[in-house]
Structure formats: C-alpha cells, structure tokens
Amino acid sequence: MSVDTRAEHLTTAQAGSGHAPTTHPARCALARQLMPQRGPILGGTLLGLLGGAAGLVQPLAAKRLVDELGAGHRATGDMLALGALVLTGAVLVALGYYVLERAAESVVCAARRRLAGRLLRLRVPVAERHDPGDLIARVTSDTTVLRQVATQAMASALTQTVISLITVGMMALLDPVLLVVTLAVIALVAVACGGIVPRIGRAAQQTQQAIGDMATALERAFGAFRTIKACGAEQREIARLHEAAEHARRTGVRAASWEVASDTVTGAATHIAFLAVLGVGGARVAAHAISVSTLVAFLLYLFSLAPRVGQLAAVAGQLQVGAAAALRIGETEDLPVEETTPITSHTEPPGPAAVAFDRVSFAYRPGSPVVHRDVSFTIPARGMTAFVGPSGAGKTTVFSLIERFWEPDAGRILLDGRDTRHWPLAELRAATGYVEQDAPVLAGTLRDNLLLGCPHATENQLRTVLRRARLDTVADRLPQGLDTPVGHRGSNLSGGERQRIAIARALLRTPRLLLLDEATSQLDAANEAALRDTIADLARTTTVLVVAHRLSTVTNADRIVVMEAGRVRAVGTHAHLVQGDALYAELAATQLVNYSAVDD
Ligand SMILES: Nc1ncnc2c1ncn2[C@@H]1O[C@H](COP(=O)(O)OP(=O)(O)OP(=O)(O)O)[C@@H](O)[C@H]1O
Image 1 (cartoon, protein in one colour):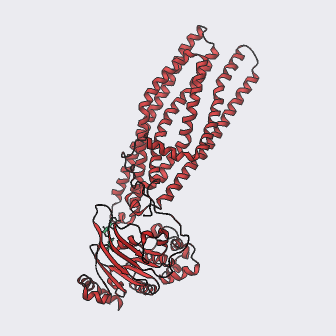
Image 2: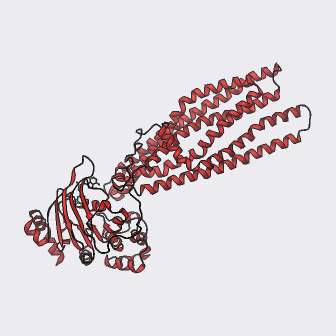
Image 3: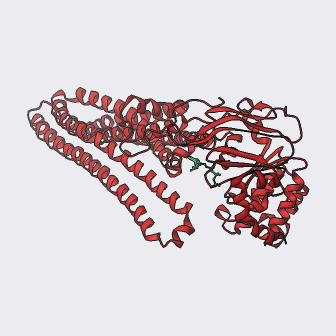
C-alpha cells in the first residue's frame, strides 16, 4: 500500500484523555518542535544571560558607590560605570528578546507549514475520523502556545536558573548568614510552588482543549449555516457554543487562580525574606559584623532574586502547557498521509481507460456493515456506463474505491488492466475526473474553481468547457465574469450552477475516466438535456461512469450496472434490463413516466 502506517488516532483529541503534559513523550514532542531553532534560541538566551550578568554587577557597583560617597570621595567615575552597566544590560536583554522572538516565529511558522502540508494530504479514512475544528485548532491555537514556550519559557528557564545561581553565589560572598535566612524562605516558596505548578499546567491544557472544542462547534454551525436557520435551531447551536466558551472560561479561570496563588506565594515570600534579612542584617550591622553597604548590596540582590524565583515557577507551568501543545501538534504531524510522489512522466497510454472490479469486498471500517460483497464488472474503454439501484446500494462507494480514497478489503480494481494499488496515486487521479454528489465549490472566484484541477488551462480551453457545461451564459451574466467571487462554498450560486461548475472543472482536466455522481440532479430540464448530450458526446472519446437516481438520465447509456445491497444484480442496456431484471423494471415503471414528459 502506498501510505505510511503511523498511528491513525489522535490520543489527545478529547479533553482529559491525553498524556499528562509532563510525560516523556510530551517533553520529546516539545524538543522536536524546538530543535530546528536551537541555534537562535541558545543565542538569544546567551544574550539575555549576558544582559542579566550586567545587571548582577550593578549591586556591587552600587555598593562601591555608597562606600565612596560615605568616605567623602568624588564618585563621578563610579556613577558613569554604573550608568554604562545599566545601558549595556538593557541593550543585551533587548537584543536577546529580539533573537528569541524571531526564533519563536520560525518555530510557529515551521509547525504551521508542516501541519498544513500534512492535513491536506491525510488519508480519507483518517481525515473522516477526526473533527475538522479540532484539527484546525491544532494548527492555529496550539502553535500559538508553542510560540510562548519558544521565547519566554525556554529562555527564562535557562537564564533565570543561571542568573539565580550566580546571584546566590554573590549573596554568599557578601554574607553567608543572611544567605541562610534567604534560602530558608526560598525553600518554603519551592515547597508551595511544587504543588501549584502542575495544576497550572493541567488547567491550561484543558483550556487549549476547550478552545479546540469551540472551533469544532463553530465549524459544525457554519457547515450547515442555512439548515440551522431553516430549522430555527440557532438558539440550540448558540447554547452549544456558549457551553464550549463557558468551559474555556472555567478552565481559564482555574489556570489564572493557580497563577495568582503562585504569584501571591512568591510575592509574600519576597516580603518575608526582605523583613527577615532587614531584621537580621540590621542586627549584624549594629554588631559590626557587616557594613551598611554590604546590607544594601545584599538587599539589592535579594530584590533581583525574588522575581526570578517567581518567574521560574511560572516558567515551569508554561513549559508544561507548551509540552501538551507540542504533543497535540506532534500527533497530528504523525497521522498517516497519502503518498506524494509527483508525476514525473505520463506512462499511461493516452485515450479512454478501461475499468474492472474483480471480486471486490469492502466495509468502511472493521466491524461496520459490508458495503461491497464480491463485486465484479468490466467496463471497456470509451462509452457511458450508469450505476443505478436503491439508496445505500454502494454506487458512490464504487467511485471512492476507484479514486483510492479507500482501499478494498479483498479483490482488485483494475484500470487499464493494472491494479489501482500499483498506480502512483497522483497518476491515477490525474487520469480521472470526479464530480462528487454535492458538487463542492470553494470560496474564491469562478475562475479559481475551474482551474482547481488544471491550473495552466488557457483562456480558450476555459471558454470551451464553459460552453460544454452550459456555463457560458452564467459567466457572462456575472458582474466580474470569471473573476466574480462565488462566496463561501459557492453560496452566491444556485445548486444547478454549482453542479455545472463541478462538471466544467472535471472536463477541463480532459480525463481518461470521468466519474459523475448524481452530477445533474439539480439542473432544470433544458440544461439537463443539454448536458446529457454533452456527456454522450464525451463518451465517444472518454470512459464515462455515471451514478444516477433518475433513470431518465441514463436510458441511453451503453451499459447499466444495477446494484442492490452491495452486490451487482445485473448488467445490460436499458432495453435488456427492462425485460431481464425485476428491480430495474420496477425502477423504470415508477420513474420513466416523468422521463417521457421531460423528453417530449
Ligand atoms: N464515509 C463513509 N463512512 C462510513 N460509511 C459510509 C461512508 N460512505 C457511505 N457509507 C455507507 O456505505 C453504504 C453505501 O453508501 P454509498 O454512498 O456507496 O451508497 P449509494 O448507493 O451511492 O447511495 P445513494 O444512492 O443514497 O447515494 C451506505 O450504507 C452508507 O451509509
């Protein structure tokens, strides 16, 4: 098979079902996302570190300044040195931030590009198994979380740890006794934060999932916008969205509460440490154990250390959230995609393709009802073949299997005598034109839609297919002609116009095999009759397969395949089947009164 075989499920798709953010896979996923930018991230961190080091020397310079002034000396040089230190530190920190911000944007952009590249190449069964809203949230919202981790969290984790250690070293040099007092307070903070930080991570992960749920609910609503209005279901859908928003609010508030608790603990600890150091330090100054300037310098170090300890606590939470987002992104990147080998040479013979099903059996999912049972038929190159039968008989599935959206469980599908599994996928699809049942039209202009499968078509080719699909008058009527926007999913067009666009789009590819699934069901009688002639004309040079509910559209087919409950009942011409197949005769008896009326 021409697909990779990675895990087909997103384990973190549902709230609470994923890995805890601190697990090894989560950390590996985070490292995988950040690795390509490790150079700039380390560079930016180093600059921040140097800026922080400049800040570290400031208390010593201040101490010296106080000593000089206390001794009645002029201290212009010391003042200038202190100013230069402040300036250098600020410039280095700013530069570091800039480098990190750039690296973060690169991390996010690379993740988004990788995800976009893979999502559109997902295997159909895999794509159908996941909520589009959740997949979209992974590309937009989770990558944004990654950005924060790639800048602040990673850099802070490194710089703050190193600078905090140096600060502690400096404090030890100034007065070990005051350091013991400070470390005792820090130890208390560490114990309190140890309980708080994982809770911040978990709550923030749930917020990310809640945002994904909102995207899913929105995608669902916009996917059936008019139906929701027509059913008067706006309030119920709004309630669904409100529920998702409320869930995001609740988890957001929970995360914020824990963040506030963490800030409060570190803030209170700063004050306690300050008061303790001031009390013990004052006593030591009075006892001449240390000088006033030493106490001032120590307090300055303490004030620089306190926010760093607070930041380290926050960073631990951010890293957890980032790891959870990276895990969701990594899982999505690992979903199996279709092969991507581009077409290098056209090895297939020109002209119409022959199709055969050889004892094909198929179910959409293991354990789900069998849709095709031992289906066999042979369709020679050229001519029109229609598939008819009751709803759910498996007609559309024939097309899905030919296009290799799905693979048969047993049997073979042959195109030009060659198993479709041995065709390069791009080549197989290039040989085929497919008009789906609901004739999807994409947002953009009419021209964008037509050129979707054949971007280099000339203006002449465009005009020819427009005429053949009976779209020329529509295009002429539109205010900007072919460059008129058609709206979201072609909402500015009628159902019949959308179908004709889908047909024109398929014709433009000059396919060797044309698959039309209920492609004219929404056309008026005149347009349908004209398109029936176009298709009959096409069938002289191309193999045309048509799924039809209305027999009136296919009575002139070269052969008709009658399907029922996943089996081929009969194959023949209209005249032959009316005589020879009871189901077909019944369909003809109930439908062809209308046909005569239309034809006449
Ligand atoms: N993507 C899918 N996943 C799971 N089951 C599916 C999927 N598509 C179709 N089915 C099921 O497979 C069966 C055959 O569907 P298919 O669309 O091939 O029938 P059909 O003959 O074309 O029907 P209709 O005439 O109503 O379009 C149906 O029972 C349907 O519910």
